Image (cartoon, rainbow, N blue to C red):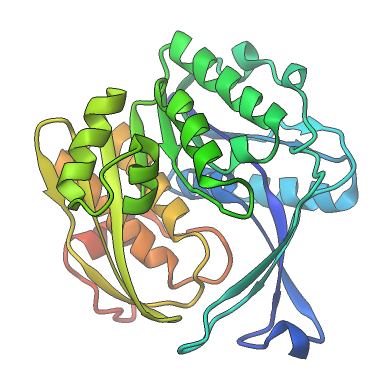
Length: 329
């Protein structure tokens, strides 16, 4: 079995208990997560061989993050140690009409201060078939943008399939810089996913067009094998409907829509990315690919923390029509 490699920043997340606000909190629950780390854990949980790449300081808290990855079977051998700190973020759960609130404390984290020479991509990609990253990683610093470009170029040279979750974060960079950087990276990608707005920003046109038109332009502009757009409508902090569309350059594939009661708003897109990669590497049909990805991300919203801990069997049960939540005995 060939391995899947992901690159990104893993952070320590601190959340007040239940639905407490930051101002009420007397203690915080600790989770570890980050877009590509969440993808790695989910894929490992699905039974895939996955290696996660980042840079973390040589201290006890960073070691806890590594131990958390190892607990789920993620390979951590190529994580670089060094730098001063692990990034933090604080997450206050939303309730009813009050949205979730996030506060980041990630400036000068170890990965943001990493250097291109920290990573030996020839070694990292030995035995790999797939490389995944998100638009968050190149936004962390100018050097991280160069590191990400080095990675995608090396991956393509070695014949890996390359996927990107567009993941625009306005607190990290502006839309113009995002679009320019992402377009350069997309030249080396085979699979892309994101929202309508992110896809339109990457293309640089098409504001207000329908989903299928945007997907068609997206695939044609960057020569992608697959592109997907997640479609959601949020009604309250805890209630959302969720579906997605896949385009393979010829046909469009629509997933069923799920009405979701959300336990934790973090990580739905990452669960979608992991489920999509699992389905493609497992050679499912195109309709099965988008159904598995959408069902996998739906299940994530039922779990606290950043990562999707669903099994393949649980995702298959949901995608095949059993969404009753009936007790399994």
